Length: 71
Image (cartoon, rainbow, N blue to C red; front, top):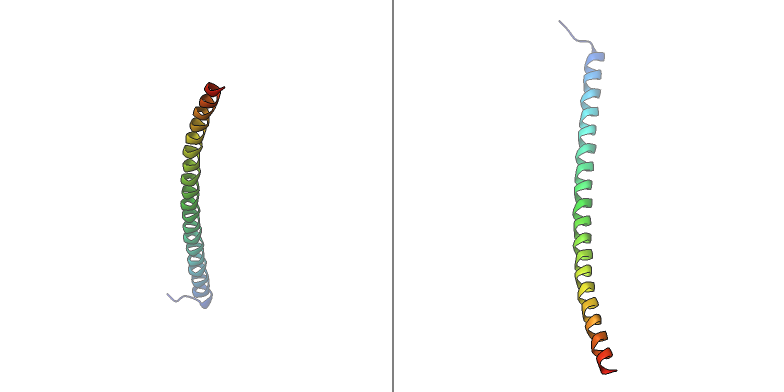
């Protein structure tokens, strides 16, 4: 049972194609993971700003009450 050169060529092409597919797949997964990490960092920054704004609003309310009591 001997294989023709076309068979070896087709097997080689298929293996290369599978290798390229796996490489692109892994690269895409790594890119998505990096994007998710960046989004998490942005959300942490945003949440920190929200907490600070809540403190500012409370301080502003307190200042308004003190100003109103002075009048």
